[in-house]
Image (cartoon, rainbow, N blue to C red):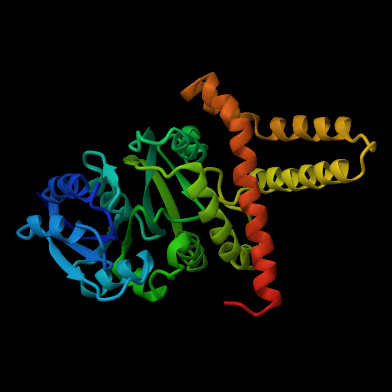
Length: 334
């Protein structure tokens, strides 16, 4: 045990009966390698999550919230009772690799200029029941294949990260953005504004149960509408390997143009815009070429063909998110 390292490990849980047991087993094993406590915050689950968590009562501290308030609120509730100077946030539906927590805390302690250290996702999809979730996994992991040891990142990875408790409270904790997620962008921005760095390291890894493309689409609509105010504030796109990159925005814009041209072509019969549409499609796939090569290398031709369609599904989610944001602004909807 490395006694000079200390950390409070905080796990928000909501309806995670299928994954929480495996997640806790991994974390308990890693927590034994340093001075630590494990705090599990059950966010008013309606399945058997709480029952499963109670099987680990000797190793963890369980807090049961009376009302579901979202992952950000659950993480904050855990931080408020944490006793150690470092906070490690781990989601209830991921598998962490060996020595990941120790490596994260070690890296955080290396220099005062580091505000957060996040783990890097593995290109391994634990959701074997949904083929389209493999596309979501690839889209989420794209860019991390270019990392060497670590990278200075624009955001923090809320799924698995460490931050000092002092800085966390100074920055007013996680912003709660309900079911869509996205609080990592707000926290990452606040860390940068405090003149600290967000580090993403390969010395800590995790695998996740990725959702299918339909669920991802719905989340992106909501997440985009809530992310735009932050994007307008910072006036800068995120690091490659994150959500809001310049390439992603340009690709989404081209999907919007394609949708408009297809609509015009359909309404004005005889006005053949096929060549323009084909040209824009080719240009778009050139922009997405890096991702498409990444897909082919890791999943083969079948997933490559699906990705030609999947790219537009993701882009349409972003477009609808922008429309939803404008609608909310116009009608003063929070």
